[in-house]
Image (cartoon, rainbow over all chains, first blue to last red; front, side, top):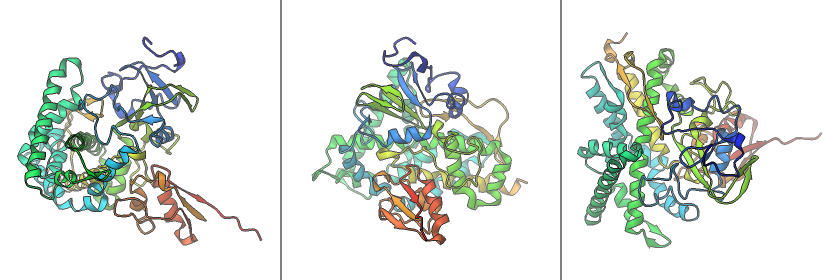
Length: 403
Length: 69
């Protein structure tokens, strides 16, 4: 209770640490399931203090209200992803809208669909590697390299850089303890140097990749500045990697431990798109954060200017007020919705790309490893922040050998 | 039955089109291409409701017209 602002009622305070809390990390996507029916919102005394709204509709409304709930800055604690504001994540409308419009066409559904062959090629190549044996650690073998390699091909960066990117991203996103600062800074420096190198290369020789497309973008009639271009690329670089990796970890953990539902997908592959949405609902991994811009009472809670607010999308997807049988994975559930990709003006720009990657990945994995199951040795451990599985040891037979 | 669409709440999730492709069309940027109000026939009702319910933003809602005789 130390350090809670005076305007927060004592009864509303609850310790919740979605980064490192031992209890919270036992099953992170479920970490608010017991709290949510009792508390529509509460104030956590961790990380400088922040409100947490636990229910879908409240999160939706907050995310749809950038005037009262700002993205400047984001992150609890505030970012150290980059030392400069991320573009467009850390902007509010109307400036946000201008940068968003620059990026939107590249990430529109029709445009993204054109990358399917390349995505499938990447997925198949990774599975070829896994099938050289009958067991592996899934995150390292597939979940981490998949989005990295896809991203590299979209921006025409060399595939040979993939391993380096993976470790840089991991350090920047997950090494948040004070003792990790040196490693984190080094990772950030490496990413910075690399992006600047590519920007330089594309100026000299433009292509038809993302960087070439962005560098000629106009903001208020003027070409986007080098600083803004860099900030945008940094954001896009970070945003597309860890998120897909972590979600794939949860998806495969689920399918590897639920044989009947895995079989349902094998029997009827047309179920897959809806199954993906249903699993995203149950395993939303990102939390939106907002800063309150004025003193307001929101649904009875006294918010003050400067208060930070956490919108844990994992709780929204499992909200009993929004879904019947919320904790049940029903691949035939109608009109599945969720906040895995957020809501409001900052809706995940990469959502169409992410869905395509994950759909293709699941298609290929199920087709070639239909009996994929968890290696029973050891328990699965999770990390917080952007929630994820640390390691997922799996076993499988080749499709033609699985009965 | 009338379908109402609040364009300011559409942020391009594309879920309406995904669950009811015959009924909802997206523009080139992935946003719903539809007028603010649209009369719905009985045959379209099921698909329409599917799409309305799938929108994470609740950008659409339906009103029912009461006919007095």
